[in-house]
Length: 380
Image 1 (tube, one colour):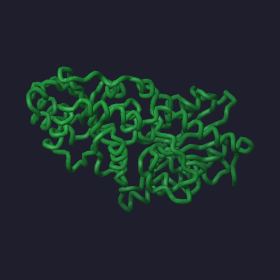
Image 2 (cartoon, helix red, strand yellow; image 1 turned 180 degrees about the vertical axis):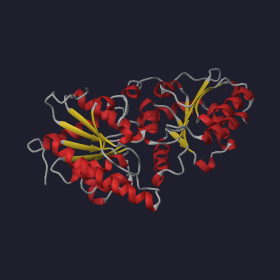
Image 3 (cartoon, one colour; image 1 turned 90 degrees about the vertical axis):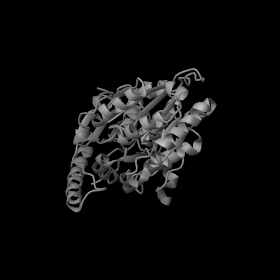
Image 4 (cartoon, one colour; image 1 turned 180 degrees about the horizontal axis):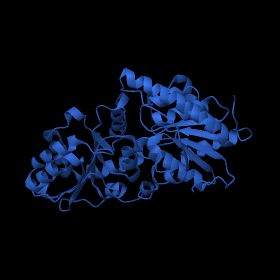
């Protein structure tokens, strides 16, 4: 078991669950803290009870939780009840474990544990993955000792919390971190042009509809150079495969790729949504991207993520409503004509990323342990 309870180090509780954007940084921090001799435990909701990777090796506890954003009145009442019960469960658990620090990673899976933690004597910290402070994290920003951010500029942070905010970057998985120094693939007018298309954990139908049509609008010499790897929803697979066959392109299509970090490293251009984990992995490896924010993301945080990378010169933001076959074809044609702009964007993307973010976040957590090492405990 990673971070075994008999190692003698400080006990750190991680509160995480839900999507990769919340889980991946928790996994990266778990590895970093384990390497430094810390004991670790994970508190999550029922969705996170079967997590893989490093988190799957931790002592894991599940508490009740429920989402409120975007829910109807009845569902909100049920979720509030689940959060209340989960908070009581977490309170009892933390009283038993007596951790030195509790770290929350946002999302509703973390809410009961963080609510319980901020009313104890244990030190607390939260990590925000997006360029907008998430709603769950906003609940705790007034109370936690430290707020770690993935971006230098994050909106919705209360003025009273600015002095407690530290830019650490977005921790990435070891599989991503290992590819940080991978050179940008050689690119010339005669080489294949590798495009990776994916849209989050479940793909995005908009890419299945638009990307083949955009490629169809490219002139023959440009189109013939393209090598496509595309993630798609299962229901879009047959139509997408037929579209590429009609174009005479041998595209690799699948609902899910296990080796996305390597696919990113092999690409000349990524086309994707702009979720927190996607942007972090693209920048840690250093690849240019066309980012199309998911329009229904809470607080439009994906637009903020994409804007930050666009502003840094590491990619290009195209709003979902502006992503048409014509607009994408124009962008691809321009990039194919100007390979140097892609190389420049790759370098800018790598500068914008922080491959050492996991280490920086671990440093922050261990400073909290050091500041409070006399009295991990519980306030009744």
